[in-house]
Image (cartoon, rainbow, N blue to C red; front, side, top):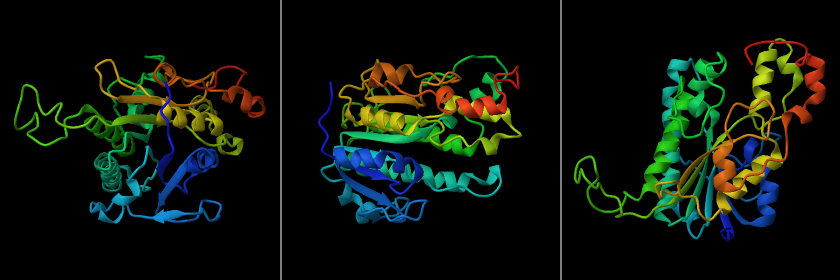
Length: 302
């Protein structure tokens, strides 16, 4: 079943990922666009962008933008700086921004939020297990474990999304300080949430991998093409029933193409959303693969 969608709100509307989807979305839907700037990375002006700081906890300046919206697509992100141990401050603000988006959508009775997570929400499995051949596939519902603050933030987005989908945020006492048996479930509405763990939504430039063939092989697995990411986000917004096996309208899906070298599972994206990726990085980047000699013997743990 497909939901009827007329109006969507997109954050991070001048960013690289949004740039790939906006042409299609503008044709299909009425769009409300939010970002902190009005120009994309090419310096081109993106029309009708509302300049908004979503990190601001006082949503009085932007909450009205969420009114009468059928779906929210959250792509906005504040870049981190400094050494890894210092990334907490920036990523904490990204978590706060995600909360502000969820809450604004919840209070405006938006039925669906589709949020950009990342394969890094569970990248510990990749770093510690996949490349050492201890497991073959990362599943979307494995406990999200990361070894860096970027991944930690994305995993926290997913946990926040579950809170807003579970139905326990209405008036009353919660299950931590009040009713320890039933919590507050049933006292709030269940907002549909789809978390998309995006892989590598970019052209894989051979020049960046001349001295690191293993990284190229890894990114061939993570690649997602513009038409596939557009299809996936469209299905995440339009699919009617997204309840998990426990009746919670919350899904985690990997955002990659149908790549030969992938080690992330597309099962939930296929089964729950009907995602049918059309592209394979092995074909798209066949020339680069041949020129780098990736098919001439083993070049690394991938």
